Image (cartoon, rainbow, N blue to C red; front, side, top):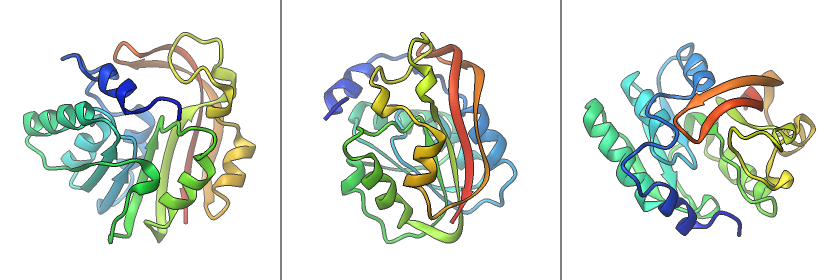
Length: 199
């Protein structure tokens, strides 16, 4: 298993929020167009997107494998005076009785050997008609210094997304070059894939 909990606990161990405390630009732009409801944020790390969604009236459930990520997310929520529900869970072990109105996948790069299974598992928690907002590194990101896995199999292509998330109707799906400015670990020129899909 690449990037185990120990890796992320160490990465999130400093006081600094390594991806910053502001929401991802694409996530913010898309969620701002939706009527608030319930949202699931897998692999949510230090909580920047969860806290923003909660500040906009969303009922937020987040999870990650990192205890340190959870602690920092809850501290940020307290500072911003919002409530988020945050669990420690591996993606394939996550369970919920809730069917969510939206799922936000921001740089949720699961190990290649479980990624398809992980996406299928997560989609069962999305209501019919629910939205998925997604941004992650494309395969062309390899060689850029702005962040992301160094294993090409953990990076995305548009074809892979269409295959792995075939139950979605893509309102928007594109690969593009952007300038990232998210803390010290997502900074500089980046090649990403962004999509909005409806179940």
